[in-house]
Amino acid sequence: MFVATLIAVGSLRHEHIDAARAAIVATGAVPGETVWLDEGAAADIPFFGDLVPVRAALAALSLPLDFAVQPIASRDKRLLVADMDSTMITIECIDELADYAGIKPQIAEVTERAMRGELDFSAALTERVALLKGLDDSVIDICRAERVKLTPGAQTLVQTLRARGAYAVLVSGGFTRFAEPVGAEIGFNLAIANVLGIEDGKLTGTVGLPIVDAERKRTELLAHADALGIAVENTLAIGDGANDIPMIEAAGLGLAYHAKEKARAAADASISQGDLTAVLYMLGIAKVDWVAG
Image (cartoon, rainbow, N blue to C red; front, side, top):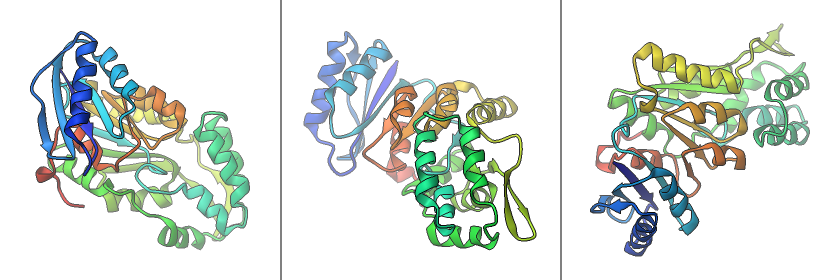
């Protein structure tokens, strides 16, 4: 049995649900009774049938909401692996560091292309970090304090899942100097990221090897699931760019968050309307059971 979850906080209407139910029926699936998770915000439609055509049918409706379709049996997620930049925080840290060096447009253009999957991630990161050579180490902490903002819902998502017994890993193609404090503030168990080369208080323009890239993110998800004895079906991955696709595809539920086109295409579900609390609705967790961040 499967469940389709519709999410539009403050604007989910009965006509949206009726349209979704009709689309589900049109695939040959048999829906059960609709269950409101929170009135006007999120609702579940359980059904018997085929998951793939139901996903396609709901996407074709182009309703002003987010949705997920997944097996009910594996809806409870015990492991979360998430990207940081433009996912758990609202910025790309390397672009903001570049702003302090006066070269943001040059670096941001490369970042955007890498996120779209047009460039090799490791090569693009190496190229961008090289341009930061000579930047004062203290700028990293200034940048973090002045520019880093948590994505709405990040703390609520992670702390709610951890309160329910899940393990949470932040895996970033960015840098430890950002990821470690961000991960601690949000509530992750562990943060994994790249290490910037620093000598005599200045960035050397190098990054430690091996680089945390797309394959490393996938490897961390599978390795943590194995180490914790968690079935892959009970894992959740969230990201926004091409570098996140392997872990999104490997997870039991792979989510694209306000993501680039390639990441959306690879994901089981995409959040483009709401914030990160939409993930909790997708997992069947009503607001009354959230842990406030």
